[in-house]
Amino acid sequence: MTKAILVRGYGPGISHAVAMRFGAEGFAVGLAARNAERLAAGVRVLESAGVRAAAFPVDLGDAAAARALVERARQALGPLTVVEWNAYASGAGDLLTADAAVVRAQLDIAVVSLVAVVQAALPDLKAQKDAAVLVINGGLGYFDPEEDLAAARWNTMGLAVSNAAKHKLVGVLSQKLKSDGVYVGEAMVMGAVKGPDASPSATIEPKAVADKLWELYRARSEATAQLH
Image (cartoon, rainbow, N blue to C red; front, side):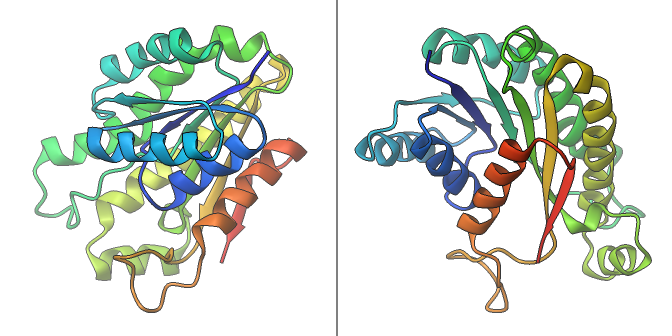
């Protein structure tokens, strides 16, 4: 039976590298995000590489829509072996002035929708011995004074808080699902990732993040790995 991965928060950087990495390992790949044109382009690239792929336009900030997408992906690709999550929002930079609805939207994407997806995919995940929930996260989510200072200075406070919540979610889900044979882990990106719109100081290659996520998936041991 072909394994399937659902890549949520798809874009041309890390998520595309993850899709290509798992596709090269024989996975069918589902791509999910808001931008339908970007999704279609990603599917074309994957298919040109011999990877079975499908696109699923969706607002991942809507937990009900994110949950419903699991069944759509299952019908198109078969039972899900891996749920990957790289969706995030960048609002609420200054928590002292941010609207409450914007702060809530940060957590909807980082935590609420991710939980909804895991719940919906759980029957598939528990039925497969090599199933996993894989998360891309950012270093601002660490409970570290230097990261906190950076978030305050750079007006990325909302992202820092939502990343921290996501980091804790990975930890508790890892413990909860371990006895069911479902691996939960995250690649914690501790710097800027290279890309067309990246800072000139960016040093991390998207492929390196994808390779690390694959290593985590295969090893199925540590819940968090850092990339610098």
